[in-house]
Amino acid sequence: STALDFSKMMEKPLSRSIGMSCKVFILCAVVLLQVTTTRAEGEAPELTTENFDSTLKESDGIWLLEFFAPWCGHCKRLSPEWDKAAVAMKAENVKVHLAKVDCTSHSKICDRYDVDGYPSLRVLSSTGENLREYRGGRTGPTIASYGRRLAGPQITELKSTKDLKDFIAKHEAAFVLYTPAVEFEGWPELKAAYEGAATKHYDVANLAIAPEFSGDDLDIRVVQDGKGLQEDEGLGGRIVVYRENEGKSLSSHVNHTVDDVAHWINGHRGIMLPKIDNTNYRDIGSREKPVVIAVMRGRPMPPGVAPDSEEAYKLRQEMEPFEDIPINAEFLVTMRGVAKEKEDSYSFGFIDGKAWQPFVTKYGISTRVLPRLLIMDVKTEHYLPVPVDVKGHHSICEFLEKVNSGEVKMTRNLDALFKVIAKDYWHIGLIGLIVAVIIPIGWSMWGDIAGPDSSKKDN
Image (cartoon, rainbow, N blue to C red; front, side, top):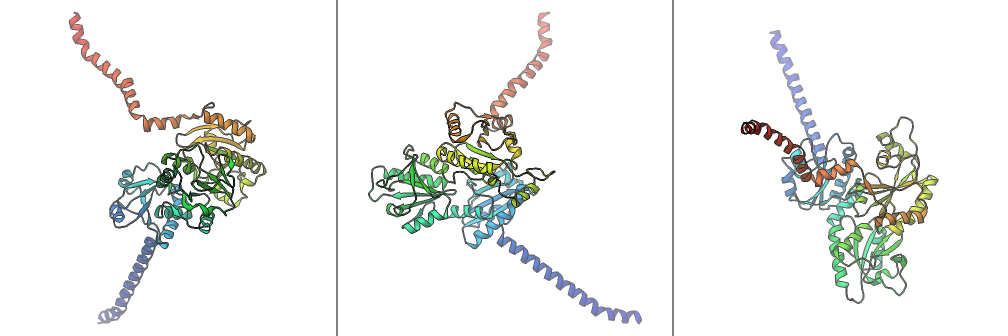
């Protein structure tokens, strides 16, 4: 009886306890679902082998994909920036979607797009077609800016002086084709070349077309082939790039073809002497000309801190800019003048020699004697450390001219050479392997087989 009464006594509390637990469980599940949903809506989702194709097909617009590995340090730094850009694109209703793929879990997708390093970034259509190489930045704002360019018009049409001033002020490098008041012979070809070049570089260059009169009151000096345009030389029928409060007109030596105009635009789409870091090095190197890198004297690190470590990276954010070191500041003034004179043949930039110490020492630059110049062909990895005694505007320009003419040759280290052989000449290597190894082995085996028969014939 006592046991029965006790069980009845416990029945209500027990049922209440179970009911409370269920409520708590449901509440937690709802909260977790909301958090997951919020992340999926606000940040770049991770796509899987199962939903990759269907997710792309259900959308309209362009996709920016980050292929990553969880252990990759660069991926860890990029991931939150990729999310920031995704949030910005969604908030602005831009038809560019961002997503990620973990290659350690979904290798089939990564193999499909020939991913051979991390992070690898791709620009895809909704059908999964690889549209073009990703050439944007690695920070939230620069990734979002790249997305806007992909979604926007290839050429912005400007109608007034105000439109033109706003366009130039908005971009660090702004290209403008001026329509002439009266069309001249050759205008249709130039306009067609500009439009064709836009299809190649609209994702990284800011391109516009404007009436000739809109440029009359800009009060910005325009030069062509190193000489300022005279007042009686109009802007109509010219392509001008505006950077750093100066305009530069398409050279009279450039043919009005799509390829030549595109080459000129690609080579002038940034400021003349940018600071190079791991977010823009490849992009600066992709401008179809060698890069002249000014290796600057960096701020010293505390004892025990590796120059290329994460700790060193954080410390540099808190230090005074290395550009302000007097010897660096003086050298940069010289290099800005050199860049202005030689940018048709070279790209230019500067780096912190301490932060890039493993890189510069690999290519023959000692960090004991800085500043110094390093010439790099980023695509082929040809390089040339400029001799220490080449100093001053005139000497540097003269040396660069010798390199450009071929009088002074660039070199390439062995590991870069092996990469090229493995990528482009593997079939020759295979033939060499057959000749050097397989044929002698086969000949030896044939001798062993044929030997007894031949000896019988001799007997």
